[in-house]
Length: 297
Image (cartoon, rainbow, N blue to C red; front, side, top):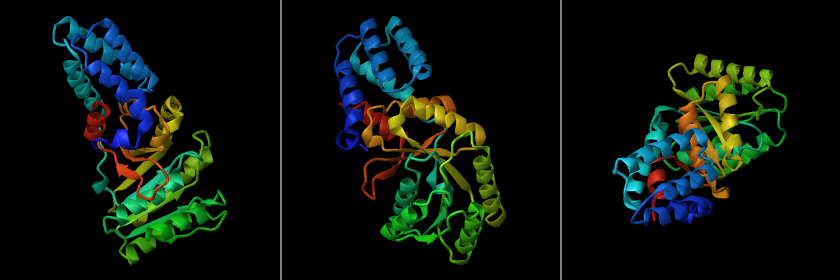
């Protein structure tokens, strides 16, 4: 990922990486250095809960003479940020069934299409299940993604019980020996009890008909929402067990610190990130690569 932030996530590079570089170049660090670091992290939406304890630890290291210059600051910050992201990690190789959840406008259906491309590029046969039968445009949108990626699709009709679409998809998954099943569900607000029950029903259908498959439920979050993304993730996590997060539209924000807030507060790993309109503008999230790149010169 080296250089990826500078090339592709230009707003994050400008808001975080370039500003940190000036601190890392210092021959001496002091209280004002850490104050600047605190401001950079908070403005990047790393959040108070992440930033304040981190700054407190760095101040202690400075008082003990461990933290003397910018190079030492970079090393210490690197280790602490990486520790936040590796508390819990997502292994995409453990699951073959993916359920995508999220609110309308979070980029969920687009993420489903890009995820299909990600696996198709690995030579895997992908089946998309159009279980969003509430939004009229969702089905045609997913069908277009299926054409673009070479994936197959189990269509649904408007108003159809989403669980029945998933039932049909599970049958095809087994009969036609697909490698990956991606279920696109209806956009839902966390307060919509009926939609949350529908999600439970979909999970039950999959477990009954594909009992040997590991299921990954991924929450799509629009990274441009900043701290609102964290609030959204908290509410969803209370309603359904989340295995990971797809952070979408990361090229459109300078708030790259939200990744640390989500990982630290909820212990939900970021599984994938998306950036831009291109078909291949998705990648599995690698914590080490991200931190290295974020703190690069």
